[in-house]
View 1 (cartoon, rainbow, N blue to C red):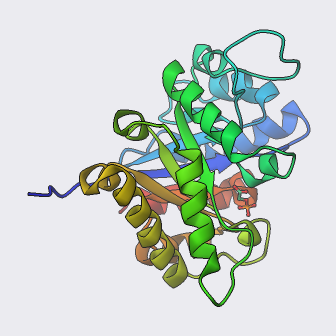
View 2: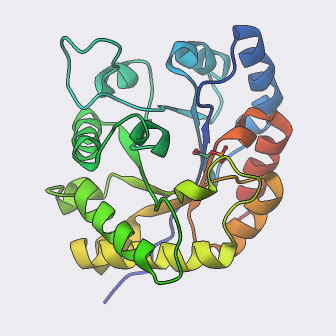
Length: 257
Ligand code: PGA
């Protein structure tokens, strides 16, 4: 018999290369402090730029907020200038790392490297938030085979036991940094498809425990409909995670579900 699984909601804030100063960091953090103490039904994960990582985690000490990095190295340690390892993130109290974000892929990261980073994260005890998503959407369903190929490539050689420690973020690249998110209906259909591919790879039981988030131009308004109708377990939020009122609204709403 297949058991019913209730997956906890996850709201991730990806600050990207923002803000520019510690003063601004303080402002943003003080704006979300109120909700930072309250989330219980939802895991809130903040991914600030690495240089602000310690500062943000100190400012939010004793709150329920969790921390993650925006990227990690595919290597364990050594002569890799400019890179940060999964163990370093862990030693600073980080629990997550975004892996394979399309903005990293634009810089040349491929599925092989993303695969390596997923392994490194899991081995170090960090949860990788694995970004997948098509570059464009066509009328003939080619984006579906793109997605299938990408999922198979990034999880290649990753066992059932390992994959159960992963969070997936479906982020259609064409919907990132725009004015509108993808429609909840399309998110619903695509998340079903992603779970179907994972179920073919790992079996239904395992696919059911995996959290699938949506990311791409989410606002505090669209967050409500996406969380209600999009069949996803949370959101990966870029720009709106830098606007404390909006980010707080999203967290508060997710906390009611
Ligand atoms: P956006 O970014 O919310 O600003 O579109 C999302 C992301 O890139 O993770």
